[in-house]
Length: 73
Image 1 (tube, rainbow, N blue to C red):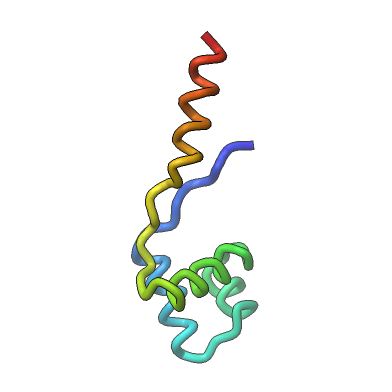
Image 2: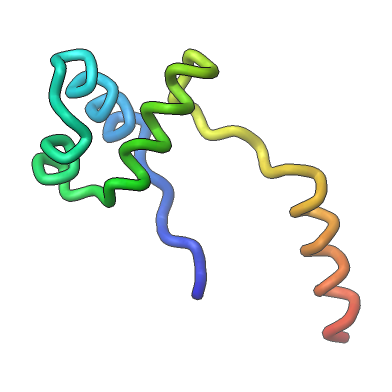
C-alpha cells in the first residue's frame, strides 16, 4: 500500500492551533477529519522539534529505494 498525500502546512498549523486551544486529540480528529495517529504525530513533532515542517527522508530509506531500483532491472 502506498503512502497517502502529505498534509499542507496550513492543515498542520490548524492542528497545532486546536492543540493550543486545549482541544483533545479526539476532538481535533473529528473536527478536521484527519486520522488520530496523524494528529498525535504532528503534535509530538511540534513539541520535540518546534516546527511542523516535514523532515527529509532518512538516509537508509533513500538507499533502500536505490537498491530496489537496481534489482528490478
